Length: 428
Ligand code: CMC
Image 1: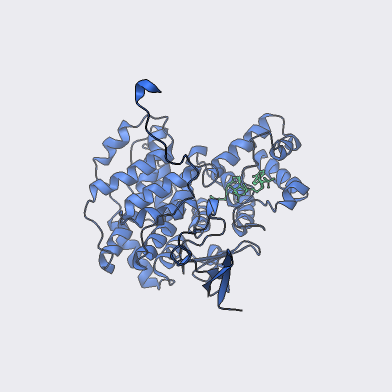
Image 2 (image 1 turned 90 degrees about the horizontal axis):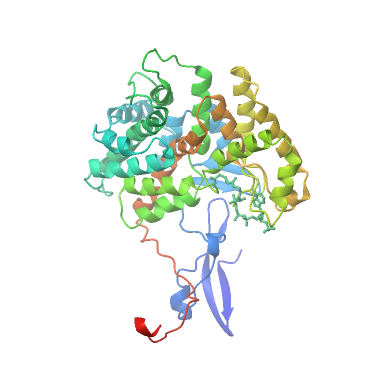
């Protein structure tokens, strides 16, 4: 393939280098476009064709339905690794040795205490507050309780900030849940695994011993792995762009949580469950909701379907669907919602509207069903997504800082009024 692309504007030709990634994806490097053409920029609403960075963390091929973290397939990682190994892999680039994994866990546990004053902030929230709003605020508040900035040129400093957020974030997640449930705030148990500890912190009742259920631990571990990174999606791009101003790790992650909350992104898992409930309560007529989703006059979308990048099955959805079947069976739960979801999927897969637009089930379509089976309330679903995405956000923030990326600052095509004289208020 040629190593350059030529652009012709008004009879004048400009050459731009082509860059090829390790998976043979090709990008046209237009960084000199504006200066070479004296002012022309590209316009790409929603960044559908724009690469914002070079990254070595996650590869996904939306046409073939492939997802890999640092070269390892998501299928293999979900089957063979645990969440902490995957977190280490994403952040530091290689699978940890046993000693590295144990040290990582020990260092995280050492940081898993949150300043007691954070509880006062939590107390001020109404019980009705959505836990994603609470989580974003408390994560931002961590900046105030840990004011020293991270020296990104020091691996040691960077590592300290990473284990701090990995340690404190699950506590904030559990607190957001317990506040809503009216349960006393709990700290973790250092003798437990990372995921076991999360479950205990969330669900322990004040008057009884918490008994671990291996089915729940394994299911949550797998779900967290599946959500751990997804290259330059909305929340990750937010984390990178906020961090590109040299804002700290906690502030950048807090912004990422807000981005994830939206129903077109991570908030879809809550929206899917609410949609499935609505279909059930309406008598279970999936065809009626399919028709609504296809009606351009109706704002309703089939939540959990479609993806900006996957134009094929989301590989995570395949794994989650299988896991949902297994987990519900293991737990002895017969959930009619699962049948509605399967029926909806079958109909969509043979409906020309969905087939033509390549709309397949995404990661969020079945995840809520497992969370529900695990006893996690609907408004905590997106929080669980954030818990899984944390290592991805950290890895992307770290990569952006180590690559010394410049501040993110897109341009625009101005389409407002041209210059006009000011009119005094009494003459308007
Ligand atoms: N239901 C009905 N129609 C849809 C849907 C849907 N879920 N998704 C896309 N379409 C239609 C859309 O109306 C458009 O039709 P037309 O070409 O006739 O105008 C066409 O498909 C292309 O859609 P788009 O909105 O241009 O695609 P996009 O890449 O901008 O949006 C998306 C991707 C995920 C926001 C969108 O598919 C969607 O809103 N899905 C439902 C929400 C959802 O499940 N989000 C979770 C995404 S996966 C997890 C994550 O990233 O956090």
